[in-house]
Length: 400
Image (cartoon, rainbow, N blue to C red; front, top):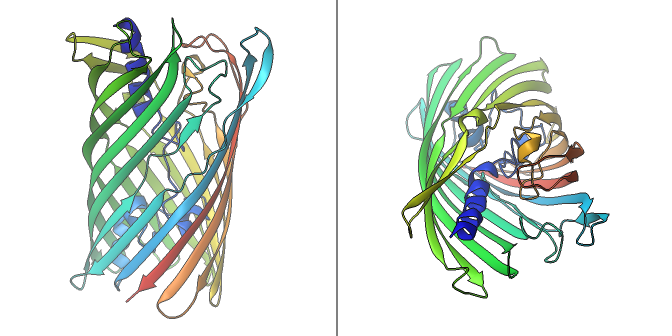
């Protein structure tokens, strides 16, 4: 049962620690091409339906019904330089994959100062896959993570320069993991799923026509997860089993300041806080023998700095941005399940108004991860990680 417990614990660890492509692994903050092109610096403006994610108060200033639909094409790449099966050092390349998380938003004014909306997106997704026979196959071979967040939202414009907004987050998620276990070189496949609830809220204040300040908060979400493990080949040494855990995803907060430099140029700077320090340990309850496994993690609070701007030329807008994302995972806990490090992001994009009711936004983000050399890790897998990612976003807007 020790082998099974360790395998399930690794996967459950992934479910919570992999929840942040921009703050620890698999969290996605790209939920609208217009915001993405500006480095995600959007909390003080939030002009479109993606306000449901960035700052729900932004809906209060939107006066007409709208749909905002899109996707982000994500192409990550990573390599590991370290020991091989032959005891030498060599470079292992992660298998190339493409991911397409969605974002869908609908907003409707129901009263003069009251706007409601619904958002559906994938804040946590992506995956990693390494060659089946690579030297780290006893830690991971393949992981796929998918989540859907459903967020009904309402915003009220208190005055011409003040709006407040609130929303509920209902989350569903599924993660699968494949890896080898020894002795016997059996392969374990784990499948975990769960649901959770949280809330979001925000305020936007415009003290002048040129200046806007936004603050938003997304609560932690507790995921009640259950999973099963299957082994190939199956044997008494590797029995199937069930496990359960309550996983608390970190709270996040945005503080943004936007300024209209001139009639056709706006700039914004945001600070995003991610409360990873709440993740002190991972406790797994094993149903078959009524035991628990506790693994210390000791993550650190982290942040993302975001800068962006938008220049308008009649029917077209040119956008630009930058972000710095600080990694919350200490060297001791770094592993190929989550080869994370500090990163810099460089953004560009355009918007085009097709006619009075239709528009299109496109964006590009290049993420460059800092090279990370780790020794003395928890999983005893030392080496050098190198990573980067190319992201392409597109959204279509319709007002009526």
